[in-house]
Amino acid sequence: MTLENNNNPYIENLTNDTILPITIENVDGSTGSLSVTNDDMHYTDTSDYKHQLNGWYRTYEQSVETSVTNTTVETTIIDDTTPYYGSINVSANTFRVGSIIRFVVRGEIDNFSAAHDITFRLYHNSTLMGTITWDLPDITSTNDYFRLYIEVLVTSIGAGGTVRILGEARCRDGGGMHASGNGVEIQLIDTTGSYNTTVAGDLDLTAQWSGANAANILTIKSLQVNNLM
Image (cartoon, rainbow, N blue to C red; front, side, top):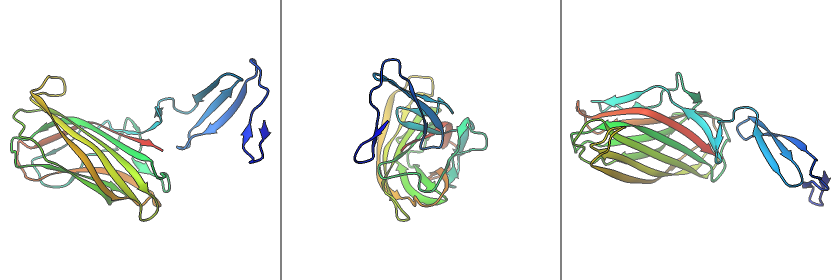
């Protein structure tokens, strides 16, 4: 290995049978090994092969089903008591400009009162990051499939950091998790918020009905959080 004038290392004179093992520490603290030959490069994750997919870091997967029913109380839909994987805690100074926090929430929803909508709120360290109001369609059947997809893009860092929240909320009237439906209703999400990247804390996602009704039921069956550093 040789240093160029700018002190960047480069490798020269490798033959077909030369294997150069390199240990790498990932952004999330896990480690991996990199084997280099003159015509090939192979990376192996030695800590948890499932933690990364196409650049996304597998951060958290929820195993507990949660629900928000017949109430106007703002209610967390994250229950990390016994997760399938990971943690919702984010360390200080983890993200840079351009990093993304991705939430994917799936479940079933009832809403026979068309006047009642749902507001989702994102928090970090108990501080509000952004608000999303879902103008629900008039759902005419029970146990309809819904999906909430959110990407929180870090647009500036520091104590006064900012984010842009993009994504979509969709539901299928007349179709549950395993059934065909009458049609899919989609609402696009595009809003902004704040995020103090200099402090550590847990992420949270809450839901709040605009009105209380026994037919207003939101059931979370799957919730995942991923990071793109």
